[in-house]
Each structure stands twice: as structure tokens, then as C-alpha cells.
Length: 428
Image (cartoon, rainbow, N blue to C red; front, side, top):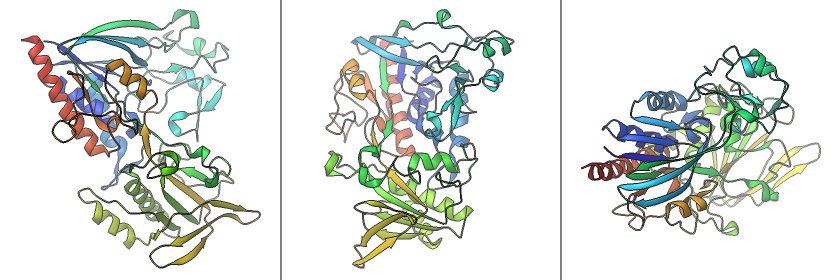
């Protein structure tokens, strides 16, 4: 029977791979990062149930690794796609890990002795990692990776590894190889908006103005602070926190007039987590419109209000730093016409979704189109939302538009069935 490829191993990609593999199709699950899991692996809880994110995702990750019909390709990116539906030739480039995947058992001895520390991108750069490392404790596959850019080649990791799994630079190299597949599912996910250029928001200019992803890592028990809420300026517990919505979304000044779909709900979730752990903390949310569109979402919103979270309909023009007084926000409550002056200890910018890095290149490789927003487009959004202009190439999850986890998983399942039918026809 023919095989299929899934590009991107986040929630949508893993679900697509599992659905196809469980129906007897051989699946190549391709991920450019050292581990599968995607953005969902960075989250603390999921709305509207406040379930642990990794408690849901980790079993799926392990199932994907153990499924005999799924071949994992981490640190791997597509280079070209030739042929037609049922008979594609997909060329891939595997980047070196500098660790022998067959010998490494993920014991951690190597990064215990490594003297180099750099910011950990998985922790939104709030935490640190070593030059030889695992991005987080529950990675799949459970194999270390050595970062040659920051490695000082001190030799400690070579000496400590009893299995001699750590490789020297000249023992590993990029590898280009080709696979034959009947169909391809593009589930490359999203990136979060970087508000660095919006100078009026004080991001990266004041340590107590952080993004929602940084906040997620801070409140996560496996994060750099062990789940403890802290001001980055002095390590103290914040007494008041303000969430500012629609950062990088619904913003005509940067040509992002679309709603990012999840920002209201994840901000409400994080606000609720603060109140549950620290009831005395004052939490305010500055919003344009609350968009609680999904099943149980409106009830979730009402639950947040009952916890004492302040919702103010208004968007601040800027965030100010008052010498000796900290941060200050002036905002008009458009419902009461009252001007408010807030002095929070911590400000969280609810950043929106944007296409993942390299989406334009992926579109060129696979011969599919993107919308003005940069997300991949389908010619039939109503009747075939996972289809593209190229037969046999499908899109799923947040690669096609901002969406939450359940919608991403649903699209992954839909794309898997399309690819499954193409593989059946090719193998007939």
C-alpha cells in the first residue's frame, strides 16, 4: 500500500498521522524541531476545562512514536515535491543532531556536566538550557541534541557518555534523501506575533511587560519558575496583573485585520489560573470584544467574571513607565465612558497567531497558495476546507488559519481521510 507524508508534528499533524496509520497506511511524520508536539507542548492548561496540556498531548506523542506504521523524521525539512497525486517524490533534508539516535537513551548525563548555558527557546527564552540539551523533559523522541553554535567543545559530554552517543562535528552532516508518497498533509502550525516593534507597548523595554507565551511558560509547573508567578524585574510576586488583548490581531496598522481566534479564551484561562492560585491578586483584562464562540466558552467567560476578574472594554494607546512608580496604563472604558488609570505590577500582552516561519517557502515547494494574511488557502473553504489547488496536497490545523486545539485536531482528521483515500487509490 502507498505511503503518505505529514509536514509538521503539532496537535493537528500528530492526529493526522495517527488516524492514517491506524488504518494501515505508512506515514512519514516530518518535524523541523528536535521533538514532536508543536506549540501545544508549551502550554500549561487548555480551555475550557483547564486540563493539563501535556497530560493530553504526551500520550499522543508516545503513541505516534510507538506506532509501527509511523516513521518519525525530526530535525527534517522538505526541499522539493515532484510528481502528482498517488505518485509524489518528496525530497527531505535532515539536519545533524550530533548525537547518535540509536545509542542515546536520554539519560541526561551529558547536559548535567555541560558548562554552557543559553536561553531556552522552548521556555520562550525565560529559562536556560545547555549546549547539549533536551528542549523539555517529555520530548519525543527522547534523544539529546548538541548545539554546535554554542558548544565550546570542552569534551565533557564525550567523556561522560558511557554509550559514546555524542558525536563530533565531523561525524555528522546534513543528509538529503527522497521518499515516495501518495499524498502530503501540510500541518506546519503557527508562530506568535512579536510585539517588539510596537514601542508604545514597552515590550523588551521593561521586564514586567511580557507576552502570553512567556506567561504560559512562567505559570507552568515544568517552566523556568516552577509555576510560580514572578515579576521579571525583581522576582517579587505581582499584586496586580493586566492583560491587554488583540496584540498583532485586528490591527490595521500592521495589516493584520483578522481575529486570532484563541486570544480571548487563553487570556481568560490564564486569568482564572491566577485567581485560583492567588485569590488576592487583582486581575484586569482590557479587551475590544470578548469572542467566546465555542462550546462551553461563554460559560467559561461567565465563570471568570464570577471569580472577580475585571473586564474593561477599552484598548490602551500606550504603556508608560513612571520613574519610581512602575508601569501605568491610561484607558477609556467604552461602556461607561470613564477614564481609568491602572498601575499593574505585571502586564501580559495577548499576542495573536501568524503564519509559521517559512510558510511562503512551503507554499512554493508544494505548489499551493497563501492568502493575504500568509496562511495557506483552500479554493473551497466551505466544502473542502483541507483541500488545496494541488491534488494530493492537503492543509490542516493553524497552518490554514488561526484556530484552537479541537478545531486543529478535527482538520487533521479530515486531511488524514483525504490522504488515506489517495493512498488507497494509488495502491489499488
